[in-house]
Image (cartoon, rainbow, N blue to C red; front, top):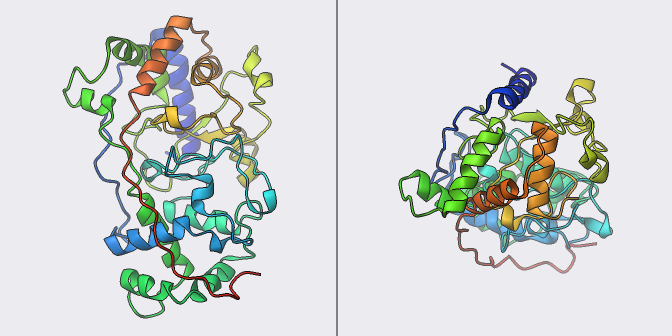
Length: 346
């Protein structure tokens, strides 16, 4: 089954939820560790190097923008702008998604165009709005021009030609696979600690399921059911654009989603289902970052995806449940980067 047929199946599930009520969700717990691909097993040397590269702004054209600039791991893993700022003050077209728990996505970016964290890590470096390097080779040349990086690459990938674009991406991906937030109150509740959630959060959990939210936001990461790595879980958003005041208010259909990448009409307004974990740390919401309030985001989703208008009590309860998905963040310390040669940057 390809992603289009999967999307059609879940749109059908939404319609069924409207008429018959959603089937009780199979609640899943976030794993304690993130899976790594066979060609890039996680090691401490890769994680150490990847963390350095993640925080290093010298691989942007201006020497001012790093991965952390838009995906700040000292807070929610994003930058809290509607859309992010890159080199020369350029503004991107989409909201920066959180890097936390991205390791559990089956594909990356809002439109699912990157099959893996490794592939995603290469994109911003050469994006003219983000880090602005001419090409990946230019970024690798920067790496090789910093003598201190040689030992870290050799430790992670061996002595023979260790500094490559592929290895840099593998290291960044290895670090990002440590950025996960298991053991939220929700996880503890599902594992049997029934006092982990308040009565309102339990009520919100039941409301979330009964409304049909779990038709899309299923699985341990609340980003859809388990999919093969490289195959995104895509849904049309908004599914119900007619007689929907939020469409105009929040410009929900201005961006054509996956179709921007593929050029296919059938891909218009298809988006990768985002995680719902740690939403309290990742405002503003949606691909364009135009919805500032989580309660409002719940109302927009209910109207746009389920064709339902929620009561204030329903919204309050669902928001309370979503707060239970905020998990403890792994402790972060700033890495010490190798010294900069005086002629490195233009």
